[in-house]
Amino acid sequence: MRRRLYFLLPDLESARLTANDLLLARVEFRHMHFLARRGTDLGDLHEANPLQKTDLVHGAEVGLVLGGVCGLLLGLFIVFSPPRPASRSSSSARRSPTHVSSSTKPTSRRGAFC
Image: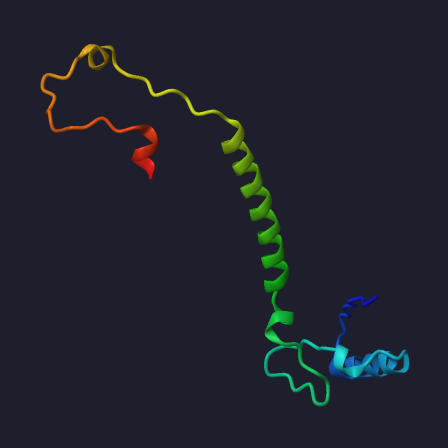
C-alpha cells in the first residue's frame, strides 16, 4: 500500500537529510518530490511537478463526485415527478375552429412519428 507523506522542513539541508533517511528506509528516490520557494535550487532533489504542486487532481475528483451525485438526484427528481397538465384559459377552450381546410388529412398518432 502506498502512502503519501508530507514534511515541512526549515531548509534545504534538512530536506537532504530527510531524503537520505527515507532512502535508508527503502523508499525509492523516484517517489520523493520536493517543493521549495521559487528560485530555490534543489540540487539533486526531485522537484514536484505542477500536478503535485496544485490541488488540481483532488479538485477534479471532488467535482466529478459532486457533479455525479447532483446529476443523479436531479435525474431522479425529473423521472419521478409527473409533469403538470397544461392549463388552458377558459376562453380558448370554448373556441371552435372557424375554417378547416379540406386538404388536411387526419393522420394517426403512429404515422406522425414514423
